[in-house]
Image 1 (tube, rainbow, N blue to C red):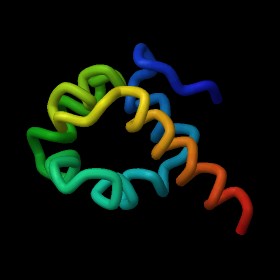
Image 2: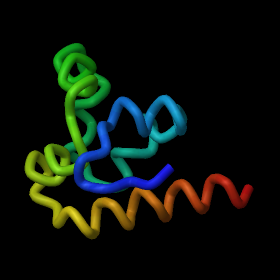
Image 3: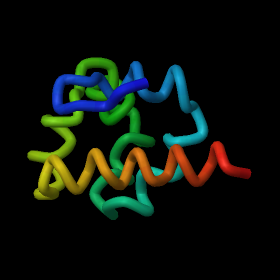
Image 4: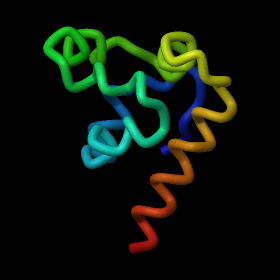
Length: 75
């Protein structure tokens, strides 16, 4: 899967469901995805949305997600 700014978080989690538990390691603000409201927002949120909400640079966020995926696949 190629992750870019338009990739929906829901699509990423379909491919990599374990990533939901790992998101908080990228940014503490991602704890909200496990709340009832977060689960609603999760369905439509893109990587660009995540970047804005967490105040993280989009490129850094994409790289962090890709690093976690590569690390997990290497196990």
